[in-house]
Length: 429
Ligand code: ATP
Ligand code: MG
Image (cartoon, rainbow, N blue to C red; front, side):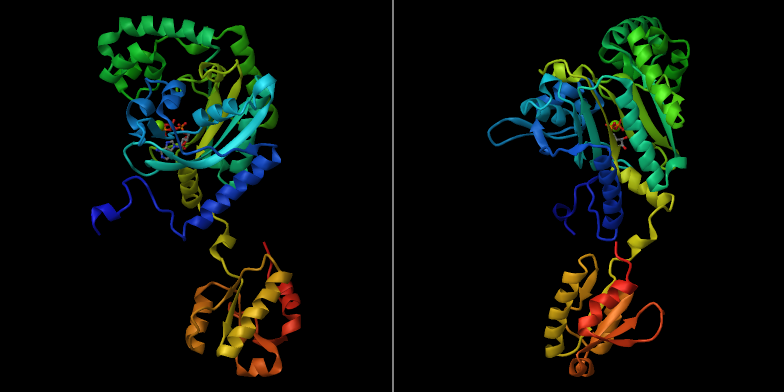
């Protein structure tokens, strides 16, 4: 196939055999979020480039090298969203729905775009479910976010395979004092730092902490620790969060090197990580961003949120074989009709059954075909039962009811009794 007719590298089709797992995952998350009182918001996929520069920070991997940015026909610089928080903050400000301290508990789902090196669990178009809460500044809401994800892992059957890492970046004051101390220390060891870290030291020194370079890591062993610079407010917040996680019984590990890639975090940061996916081990990440709304032109508004990567979580479900059995079967009943008259009667009968059993997954054969070929299709569909309408059935106003998975003999059911009969033998979702 010519190159122009292929999908862009790192941007994947999600094929029909994969979508049931996606829908199962998305359905599970959205039901859970509904139950905790979160409301969905939908933002555009494209925003002004400036929005991401201002919120994510100019000196971040995303803004420096990962954004899909282009000029609109009228010359505006636009960017395919690399994440959801910026647009969500823009939306709440634009519509004034966080004004006067109004609490908003919001979630969104959709594609994000980053020009990264594609590999397992890392793509250029990927999908997130994200959540943001505005105007609640206590550790109770930070805890709620983590508790919800903990419940989600439980429902999905992957709880044992993920680990919670926690850190506090403190208030902006304590982070400022820490940054100074860190810069002073690292500057004294400048020559031992890798090139990237030398550059970050000038632009975004906290990011040096999550370097993968062994020499720089060695230098960091004796570096000042954020934990020693937390002010009373930050410390109380962090303790409050941990007390709540303890109360619910959620295990966590303190990771002082967890700083997250985006500029806007303060106080709580967390990641759910797994060792089941190779290098791309973070399945959900987030934290508090009390200064972001103000930085974007709003009134001071506390905020906290997280985002999870759907591809990585779907991969987890597959890897850990936690895909519910019932997803394998998409059809309950397959109706075969032979001859024009039977086909018409079959269509009408199918609609009557659907009226009475709206959740029944009933597939009507299309494209006619011989007895053999229709039967083959019925079997291949995965249906539990075939319904058969031929000349004999038409004459008697019955339908042949044939178990396809070895549960008994074929029987004849009167048309009027069909829905009631199906209700007794097909468990409806
Ligand atoms: P990573 O460290 O893996 O690059 P990140 O810190 O850049 O992740 P966030 O911006 O916090 O990621 O996004 C939240 C979640 O979205 C990640 O934990 C991950 O599950 C998912 N994610 C991020 N980037 C990608 C990507 N390129 N492909 C697939 N999933 C991704
Ligand atoms: Mg990244």
